[in-house]
Length: 111
Length: 121
Image 1 (cartoon, each protein chain N blue to C red):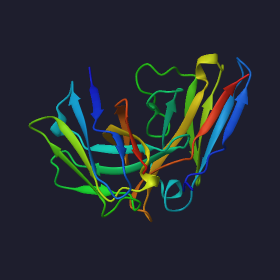
Image 2: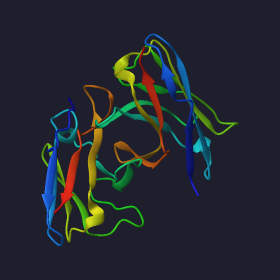
Image 3: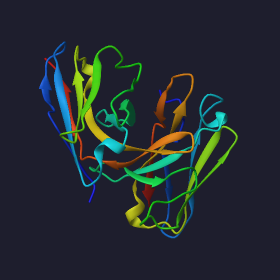
């Protein structure tokens, strides 16, 4: 059971916009610890997608964006493409666990 | 080009031991903290352990504390994870990842391809 809660799955048609939530508590996101996001394509290692809530590494398209509010963070993907079909994970730090934590992951299906 | 290459995975019996290695190249290894992250079959990511660039400080998830030991040899650009008293629930792909500090929380900007550890009799 992850301390950061994500929906198991989301879906959308090509060109649409989807959001993936990441809900924490006062020991992690609510304590203003930064949130980062990763994309894991089938059969591959995770890849950094968003760092520091809103920043994209070089090469990540601006269709991907992040935000936070209170004890939650969100990843938004606009202009969905077939290549976006993957698992997405949020990551932060938890002071009560004294460790780095991941969300349970969300599988994005492009219809 | 930054590269991380894990090795040492395999099949081990419950209660056994295994040492994983992660060979780094393309960056000044000693300047970066490093982490191990694992992924059980069909499951999500779980942070396992972290070591600072100098090797002077180490951190562990509660699930492996007292059983796993992270270390590094900066002269060989290699990260290690010694795993003892292995359990079935340790079965996973183990990734090494480079840490970057951003604000209050590290993120993992480069990942290896992973090595599979299977604990079974």
